[in-house]
Length: 84
Image 1 (cartoon, one colour):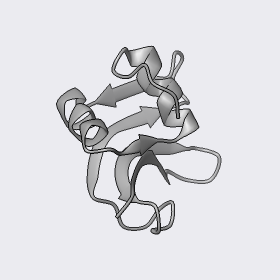
Image 2 (cartoon, rainbow, N blue to C red):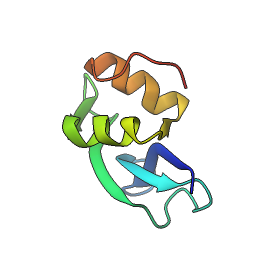
Image 3 (cartoon, rainbow, N blue to C red):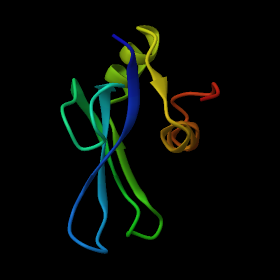
């Protein structure tokens, strides 16, 4: 099973709110996931991010690959410095 750390979209039309989740790559974007790792709200200025740092580090240690967008978020938060 390959795992990605990616965004799952929630919120209404034109009001996006995202969960940062660890999910199997075969599941759809808003489908099943393994664990919620945090949230991302792009509507706030600046964008509001909450993370469970220990769990993010755990999944990265297990070989999970962050998507490009999540990689940028993790870099800004100082959690991860690798490449997607």
